[in-house]
Length: 313
Image 1: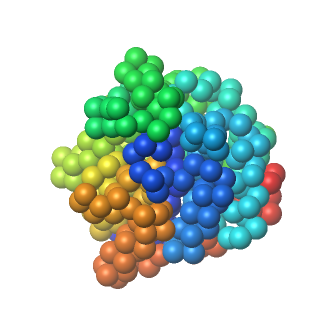
Image 2: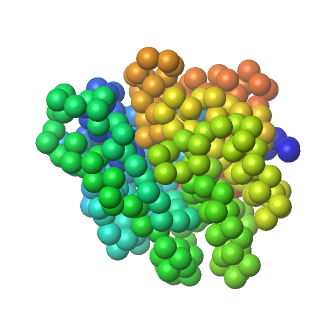
């Protein structure tokens, strides 16, 4: 297991899993999301990964114009690569989620390798009776019976059509080992070509657990067996698993992702005051391990991206 020459650090700024009640530091207005994105980039994140939220209450949105506002302002203040979600949020249609990419044509977007029971409902008891907004509890509860949908037809459409229409490349997301076989299947069809950027998503309810020995090592061995070593792979850990799992991944040769989408905490019982604080923490860990952090320009080269002069924002 070799270490990449430079570690690409991704920061997932807001996501759609956590709700405003859970942390006063979770950004959801445009000004907050833009400011935290730029600060994360200044702290060392080569990629900022974005979901959109409604400014009045922080609820998830698939409105391309909300995304455009974020992207234009971040681009004007930073050279960071902007990666947009195609996952959106539970309840959004595939057409809504992909319309954002067709409209804005970013350098990078996500592609989830399977339909998933993405369960957010276990978070409800901790915040019961404390909700800031009426939408939060029903939204979390809906994930008990409404899966996130990404079927083989959806993935094939993205691979065949979306890239050709937009020039956008993918950050593929593997929530479990079966998703690696889906990657191998589409590679065998010739629909996925290097450089491949693959994110192991570990510790979410409904996906593979964030265990280093049994799961992270197993996922990497399976990836090597199915695809070979020529994959730019990255690791994220949800909740309390964040820093342990991404540090272990980096030691094994991965790129890393942090951010308030994945965890609201900086340490045990300590809410992270910002996305930049998480970036600064993991950067310090990586540099203490003698690992070098990739700049946005270096990350673009590693991932074969088209550059931010070829986006539609």
